[in-house]
Image (cartoon, rainbow, N blue to C red; front, side, top):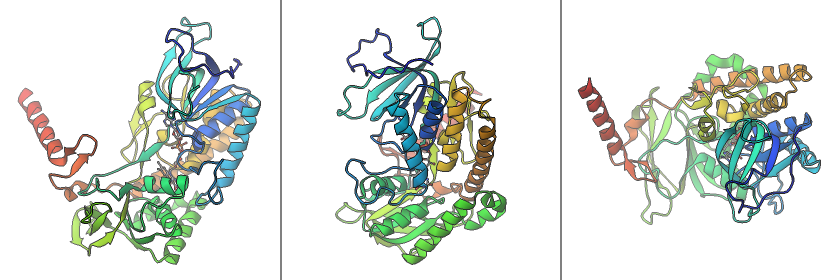
Length: 443
Ligand SMILES: Cc1cc2nc3c(=O)[nH]c(=O)nc-3n(C[C@H](O)[C@H](O)[C@H](O)COP(=O)(O)OP(=O)(O)OC[C@H]3O[C@@H](n4cnc5c(N)ncnc54)[C@H](O)[C@@H]3O)c2cc1C
């Protein structure tokens, strides 16, 4: 076991100085997967550095207000909070024994492998860090880990529609992040739209915080789940969660409309709120079959599922594949080992599948990276069974809630596709046509 150096090197370290902090295992991401990975590895005797860009542990699923300044009960709006408390206790135990160092507010912006010849500390990984706030000035610029576990999670998948760049139109995950992290309501009268089960907690949490949710618009039919009944039965907790949401929607009189989408948003005169939201009924491929009455709201929460953060995974050179939901995901074996030696990957980055799956994968990655597979053979078998059940449920979810194939029929030539660079749908189409013509000409 290498010694975890608890002295944090100042950020002014010269580039040619050796990396100050060396650990057996570096874990990126303190969400469900990373917390489980770090605590499992530490329990098996390894020194661990756990790095996260956020101020608090918990990732997206267990996002919560500042623990030093709580507002309301800390488990408000959360599922599986007990699982989080257990992981947090284990993390604190690990930190007290100096086995785990947690670097919060710290972004990993680059990583590289080290060969045995570079230093006397053996081969492994160097992670290059930058603080995300100026209240964390004494962060090291880099840390070293003999093994690396990447748990970078994911983010909301978005589709551009006319008006999606207006004030009051937000990613559903962003709306929820304001509620969970700051107890703050993004609007008083809302429509929640897109596809997937995630629309339900967002609508419920908005309503419980005092908003009027005019409708939840789900682009698909729920009958898509019927073909995967066995996968749903395998994870009864998810079915119970779904029933809880259905009852919350009924209690708050929120209309749940299937095969319905928000296809355009016209801003209000002041341009400060979402404005008029145009809804349409869709066919199975997402073509508009009928326009519905428009509604006036100040908030539109759009969510089309999640997609993994792949930056560090591709930077590490790990093999990737396209998952059922068309997301790029990491290839791992049944010990969460990636195709690059010394690298393990867990959580959303191996395929979007939810927090419980992320915890199971994280624990397995922690055990495997710590080299404790033999002594933990029974636990590993149990984790693999759990992973397989949750993976089957995730596959059912992706099959039941695809992004409708013809969603781009809703766009106009002027619709902004890239809000940062202000690139329109028409510009993208022209570029594509030009590329196709060039290829045809070369042939
Ligand atoms: C916005 C959003 C809201 C969600 N809400 C729900 C919900 O209500 N119910 C539900 O069942 N599921 C929800 N999910 C899905 C659920 O959060 C995930 O399934 C679960 O959190 C996955 O755990 P994870 O550990 O893989 O990733 P995450 O929880 O996403 O954690 C990843 C962590 O990695 C950190 N990170 C990433 N890159 C870097 C880097 N380069 N340097 C440093 N740190 C880094 C991030 O800050 C983050 O804390 C949500 C997902 C998102 C994106």
